[in-house]
Image 1 (tube, rainbow, N blue to C red):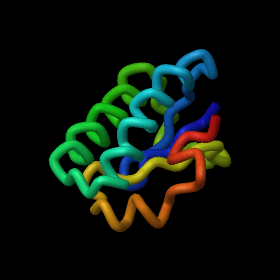
Image 2 (cartoon, one colour):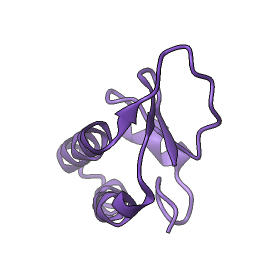
Image 3 (cartoon, rainbow, N blue to C red):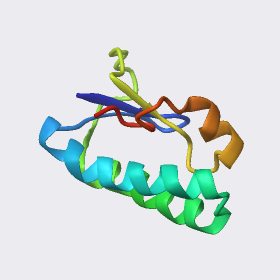
Length: 92
């Protein structure tokens, strides 16, 4: 799957990593619902770090359709809330 981190670029990520990322996504959703800004920052950072660590960056000039779009590291709680679906940022 191709994942875009807004403001950074795209990475290819094996579908087998979705379970691990979903755990962080679920935690992020709980923190957002409770208004836990500190937890939100920590978990968003962990989610993005995991995508960077597990993924392989695409060249800057690659223009592939992204199957998943994640917020920038400095996104606000409100900006991320607008990106959410019922499943969080990561479907499944």
